[in-house]
Amino acid sequence: GIVVVDERGFIESWNPAATAIFGYTASQVMAKPLHKILAPERYSKVAGKGLEIFLRNGKGSVIGKSFEIQGNHSQGHEVPVELSISAVKTAIGWKAIGIVRDITLRKQVERRLEETLDSFSAMVSNSNEGILIVSESKTIEYINDAAARMLQSTIGEIEGQKINEEYLNPNKAEHRYVKGSQLLGWMEVKISQTIWRGKEHKLLILRDITDPVELRERL
Image (cartoon, rainbow, N blue to C red):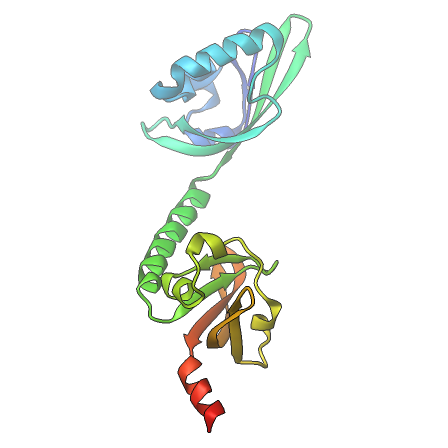
């Protein structure tokens, strides 16, 4: 949607896409104060002060940026939108051009992903098998308690670190795991692909096989 605010802070232009987002027709909003119509009550004071500063000098903390905010819908609920504001100098003052995108679907997807991540975290945190999630850049983005215990480290020490590329070799299942120069044991690594936070990642399942490997080597 495109909304233009004139030098007084009143709505000067309101296109059909803005109507689709907020429910108001152009005839309902034209020549009316923008923040009085679209800004929820909790934003009203800040929005009014920001608009006052903008109309005076064309400056503001949100000018030239994109940000997410809630806007009032004509039906009484709020709509999550992404808003980009540009300033235009005219002979009599400053106008603001707002590009508005409805991000309702994006927010719904994000909530679903968060719910899925919460369920996933609850499930794997109690797993006896170690679990790592590794990004395409080979950064460990998730590790569960079992994997941290196996590696004799804390989750904070491991998350965000680069993984040893040897562990990503699909043709090698058994690996030594060390801390510094100390051999901690042996583990079996199974690798698969997964979607994590909307992107492809590698899922590594770790199983301690120190006892059977040592027994095999003694035989």
